[in-house]
Length: 88
Image (tube, rainbow, N blue to C red; front, side, top):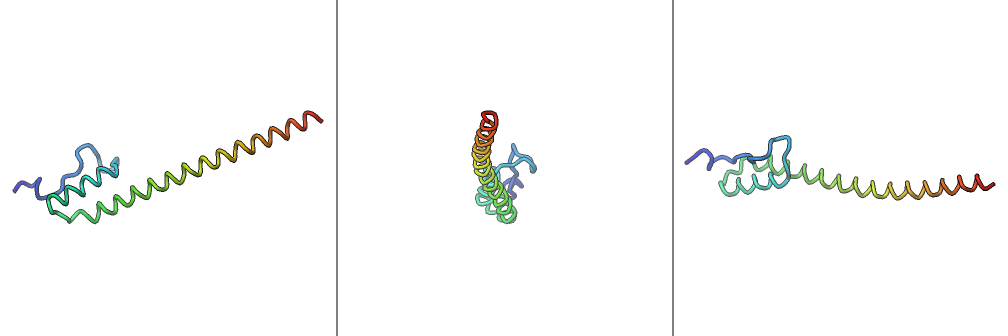
């Protein structure tokens, strides 16, 4: 057997520092095809990390939108107060 069919090969277009969840899932599929489950636990942890990062980013985006709305409301209130001072 060739070494390539026994061991899982890392993704061709992804380095270790710039990988995507899809690349990790592809490596998991390769592990299943070759029946080499040795790296599977590490790949599961890596996928979990990427999933957690995506969830955190979604939460940050939602919080950003909420803060942006609050900022606009406060800015309108402040502009109203300034206009009230100018009229008096």
